Amino acid sequence: MSAPRATFRLLPVAGFLAAVAVLLWCMAALSGWITRGQLIHQASQNVATLRGDGPLWQWPLRRPSDLVASRVFGAADMKVKPNGLLITSRDGTPFEIGLPLAGPVDLMHWPLLRLDLRSSREGALGLSYQPLESAAACSAEHAAVVSTTTAQLSIDVRNLTWRTVDGAPCEAPEVVAYMLRLRLAIPTGATLAVHSAALASLDPSLLPPTIDRQIADIRLLGSESSSSWTPQPQQLERYRTPVVRLPEDASSESMLLWRDRVRHYWPAAIILPSGQALPAHASSHMPTWLDAGVCALYLAWLIWLAIRQRPGVVRPWTEVAAIAFGPLWLIAGLRWGPEPSFPGIAAFLAALVYGGQSEWRRRPVEWGWWGRSWSEWIYPLVPLPVAAALTWADGHQLLHLDVRHILGYLGWALLQQCAMLALVMGRLERTGLPRPAILLVTAGLFGLLHTPNGALMQLCVAAELWWAWRFMHSPRLVPIALAHAASALLVESGLTGHLLRSLEVSARFFQ
Image 1 (cartoon, rainbow, N blue to C red):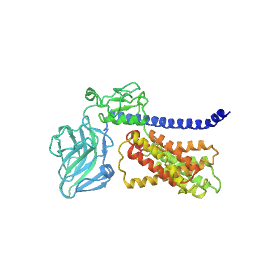
Image 2: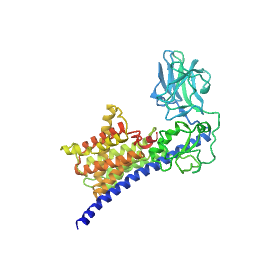
Image 3: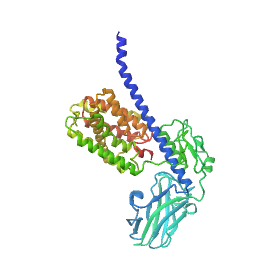
Image 4: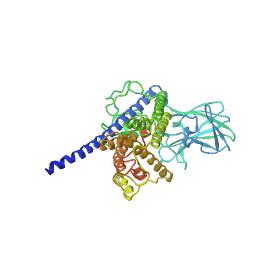
């Protein structure tokens, strides 16, 4: 009789572990699906640009943030004008303008640097580049003359004389991934109006009329390592925009590592997931007006819910949906990127404000901030040795983290756990769901808030299951937030770049 009873008691545990395994698999599957879609979107945009003879790399210089470090390097002052930037030389010495590089640029196949600028007095323009952080910088002192009459300059970087700081000769730039700068010298008090820069080529891009799921110039194999892969010399000579197929069944992290490796050799490569066709027309993300419209409807819904709130009356599923939608719209909707969606940010903040006022007006579950016993401080730290073990097994030497970054992350961890445990899980406990289901829903939502970073989503699900279980038994936020921050900072310092590509989420993950 004892054996059947023991088996019966283990069935719920086995069912819960199976549900956790399915949840982790779903996180990886969702991450891979979003990443494949993003790669197809990027490839379709590049193909449309190439077929339309547009520039793959261009820099509209309209505001300080369009420059590296948002400033001019040297003795010059910068002002923003309606159609560009106006730079005034203070003492006639050369100054530099850095063009931001979001990724590698191909100056071997796109060697024409076209500049839209005009000076109030004649001056000289030079160029400098540095292909990698570890490589030597090279410069060409007299690339062109800046005049008062010519606004458009076209400079062929292959025809310039390049030298290092020590005067040693350099090769003309090929693939540049670290630094590309303009060096200008104009008389004291002279002004330079800068509008844009772009790279161009005289050779047409030869692409197939259609790119179906079978077309590929290069097929990558999953048995190879992205870090050690190098193309064959004849491939480098033959292609400038090859269609590259990623390994089949690659994870999101692997696909992006392969993408970055291929771009190291062909920045303009058309990189596609295995077995995926390229759409006939370039895909586009949600237009701004629709994004703003959804945000406006969401804000109106939150206001209506807040007006209807009554003491002692909790609509748990409605409030969970209201609190979760804003952050998911921003992050899982890929609206947090290099150019974040302001409606998405507004929805995120509105969700926090709504949840905070709801909690202040009628807290559905009692909780506190500080631990009352040593166990309430120690037990939340269980994920920390797990993070340390992963770092030891597949990490690298710990990187230094700035004190301000550490303190900022402590506050961010506290905000996250307050939203997930106090606001969301506090309402889920009023739904009548079994406790294991509440844990799974809470951890699943927390994982989705790290979309589409697959490995990070899985780590967050596993950690949040533990922290949510601890919060059920001991509802104290600060110990859990400290454990969250300690684990995340350790992973950031020693694990990112190996098992975990980065801690970035939303559209930032694809950078």
